[in-house]
Image (cartoon, rainbow, N blue to C red; front, side, top):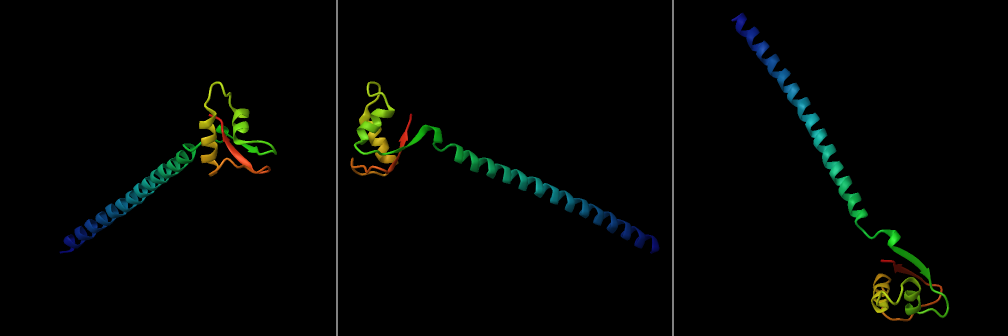
Length: 113
């Protein structure tokens, strides 16, 4: 009987040792998976930010007295190569402008591509 008790204790000790190893392995695996998921989230977040419009593709323009959307578009684009109506449409769309009336001192975002 004494041998059986020793065997049982050794078996339970080995079993608890295996459980501890499994527990440590699960914790390490969970940490690695967490780090991988956070990395993916981090990369996705910054790639979404980077996929937006590049700020070098725009310029801020302060409207001066006597300027019109047409003159501003002509200032930034060669009217021989580009349809200025499309540029004016883009300027109005980006700046949420409904009409051609602009106010001196206001700022416009002008697309440069």
